[in-house]
Length: 305
Image (cartoon, rainbow, N blue to C red; front, side):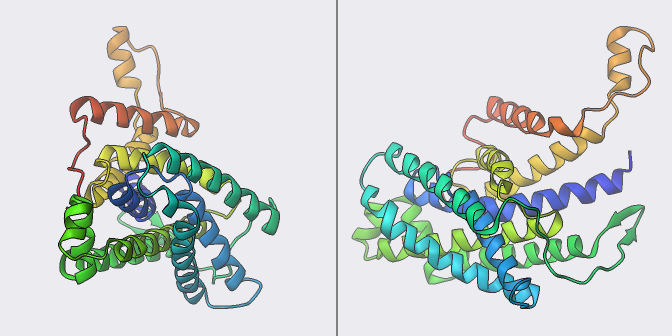
């Protein structure tokens, strides 16, 4: 096992999952329902970036920025059209509505762009060898972009007026409203930021791999597991959950289990045993079960801390 390579892969996976999970955590914290359409908005944002980058010829970075803004506005729109009527209902009705919306977005994307594999238009450059690990240029960019985005979000959440209003609304919406906070304005900002982060994450994942309409189907389980591990509603918990999932998945398929199997068997019965890459979702489930058995509320508390 190349330890450094697995470590780099784990950080990249954690970065991609964490930036998408932030938006889901925001809606869970303020609106108290599981938004199944969140991951599909990430895919839609990735396709918008592709449409601006490849057919229209915009620079990839500019295309992603425009896609973030478009999807941010789209997030406010779907809240006003779909979810606002469920504001004072229980969490089941908006959850079912989000499931229907996710199906509609996925099929609309496939009907518009087709089922084929797509890639962004960016310069092909040789990878870099770092302490025995091979890292592509886009992976280095992904780590840098995610670090800057998360640092900016931290500053916004902790020191800006909207960030303080978001934390107050997440803790107690009625009390925040009684104190003069315009909670509908806060919710609009949450949808804009959450869907914008989803678009950024979707574009980064597609940049690192490839773009297909069912990308959201492949991401939805890991993203929800990240949120569960970190603690439902905790932004920083989601980031910690992304690190746990990223490391568990990559180290889980890289570690040689032969010594353990031979110790259990009492003699050398196998030479090399590794978990196949196809079982990565099983590793994610195992991580969720283990964490929730030890800490049923997740690794961090619920509020926007």
